[in-house]
Image (cartoon, rainbow, N blue to C red; front, side, top):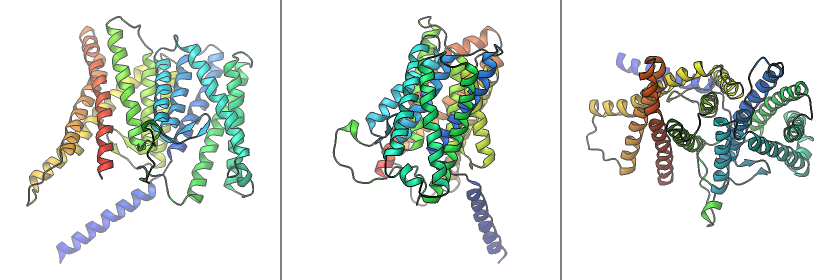
Length: 435
């Protein structure tokens, strides 16, 4: 009887823990997360512009615009939200989003070379987004014309959209015509725009909870689709795989650039922007997916606050070079070591030990694709740990030895991590389709 009581108590405790964790979870859609990170970016940039105008801080204009283009590209890739409006997230749209993201990434790495190009691209994006968004807001029957008739959050959503789209038009003109407005007034406008993005994120979050019958699905629906050209078909990508695709291409590009830099083919790139971008991606994965250091965490308000802090630190590093790189690099190194260790421990070692200690009566045969997944997970964990150690190499091995180890291994490990990320996406997509 005592054993039964203990088991029932243990089961009740587990159910209570799951209930508490679920109650503490703050469910944020991808759109809301990107708006929050965008709000952090513009609020921070507005504050920093006051100090930059007074000559108190350095400023990397190309890197700042590059990060903005990357954030917009993430909206295109994950949701099909383009500057011209919402479209079907086809493979063509995903590819265009990836291309613009790569342009933004190159601008972050080489802000001096692409400053004019990225400024024009960012100006076009902001101006078109504001103009088309404002036009569609009042033309569409299911938007402002319907929302204003419903008191409460939908009326607030209308106000938030008008604010965001209206300021986007103003910022687009300022971006195209630099110097048309004093920097102090531009800084004030950026602060208002950042606050407006937070307001819009809040309105969308509340409206989604009140009027949506179901929360955002991490796995795309499998409704029957008409046969069409491959690039025009809907891209059945989860949010996680979308992030992983961009991260894979980012790491491959980064590894190649580092290798060419070591060989003297390319000049040195903006390491502050590179580290800042990686930190912003970490914040996006934490806020949108609840993923951090290789494990799933409950998105409580404390976790969300930490994700916002990561986004702010990453944005700061992109906008203001030479200040946070000495702090961010070791933190990213430690994060990658912990991520690799937890990945191996939870996905490989623990299931293997459980299988040894509690073998099944009948032998279990895994399909080849599952075996391939385990091999990729193992390789990813090992390479991630090595990457983290190499990020710390200049600190652990000061002097020439640490620099040599860092220079030789970093590009190779980064490229391998990028390819492993893309292979992981391919395998999980096949498993999803098979399931």
